[in-house]
Image (cartoon, rainbow, N blue to C red; front, side, top):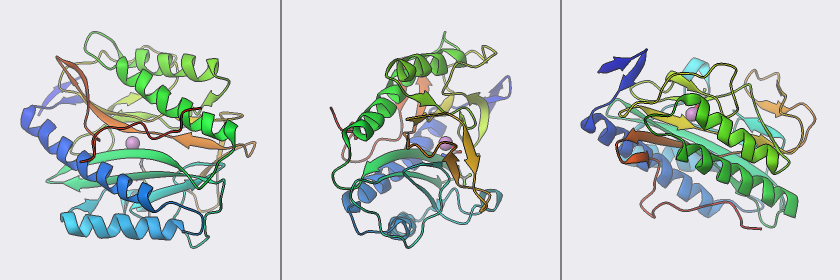
Length: 264
Ligand code: MF3
Ligand code: CO
């Protein structure tokens, strides 16, 4: 594969494989969205993801990654990312961020969405809407001629203008044969401009947005990231290819691309 400053430039075939991997991830997230309601557990979300991976004949990308023990990350309320699925039933008013990856034919798909559990408070609905909208605002900047900086700067400006904050500790990334490739894609305005974006790059953009501080702590399980002030967080992620026609979202399910967060 061709390289530009350490970032892989993918050809059409490779982008096709990445699109297929991401389509599967998006289908899995659709199936998760269909079952999320009060009373279900995040273990059930994990089971759906595992079963669909078997049906598709693909491997979960996260399981075993630096020892991560599950196929999904299920992060509830003040959990930001990398939460472990467990047996605790979700209750009305919760939110759950589900992050999922698969490896198809040697290529990684990676996407995430935050779901509402039943009826959710109005300010939390706004959190979800702003996070998803922030993702799309970032995606609009992902074209050749811009650089990585433009993506995060646009996301941060929008999110802060809506009264929320962007987590700094975790960033988006190039994605390809490996889940994490160059470049790093901050969801905030980075100190350095970062590298220019080139056609053929595939990147995951994944804003994590909080209702309070952007600072996070890691729990004793060494994975679960929670907000330092306990306020709630949301996370939306798409994998996108940078093409001469502009950004192309790869994590699109068979149902087509939709906005998932509530309008309010
Ligand atoms: N979407 C996350 C990321 O891009 C998923 C990684 S979870 C891990 O970093 F367990 F695999 F690390
Ligand atoms: Co990712």
